[in-house]
Image (cartoon, rainbow, N blue to C red; front, side):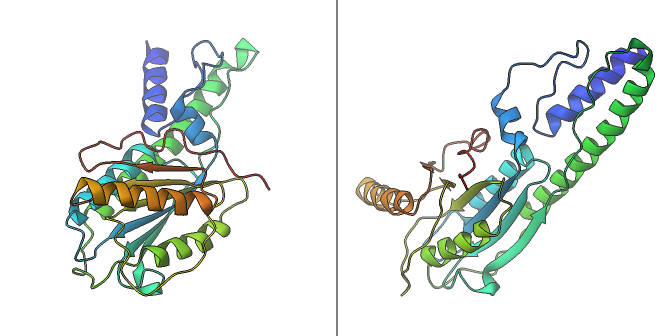
Length: 257
């Protein structure tokens, strides 16, 4: 009974971390899941939260970002959070950087049955690592939920954010997956233009606000073309009414080097 209880705790902790373990009891690998694939490789995620006067859903955007991080962040991830404002490239637009420590691999079942005690002790130690990660992830999500918005910005500098995203993703580890996550109305209205490179990145536009269907369609077409031409592997739009709990379950593959 004690062994079964331990197995339950270990499985629960691993599921909470956003990854699926192998079959602990049998020691045989399970079929890969979306969550398992997501956590197999660390990610660098650049988040832009629009706080401009034209965007009425800033609170919803913050809540979505906190929820996504709490449900889908993985060990060894790096998340950069920034405001989309009148000068989104400026250092003043930075909110915070969240870095999660790696978690060691789950111990595999030994071939020698006499090593069972050592294996259970290794699983307990591994479970403690997962529990620490889970607590840190929850704490980070709560900090995002509690963000104080400096006030409505006087402009929406989407391109400044994307140019900064280019720089941050360029410094990501070579093996990392690259993600750009934005909550915005995409109404770029400042005097800035320029090229940016999002090669291999998955770009997610969440809580996308548009006041009428014609404007929404025009913005979707324009930004889909602009982002795709920058090398983005995928561009995904989500309506404010759509939940986004699984948007990071299957990001684009890591770019070739």
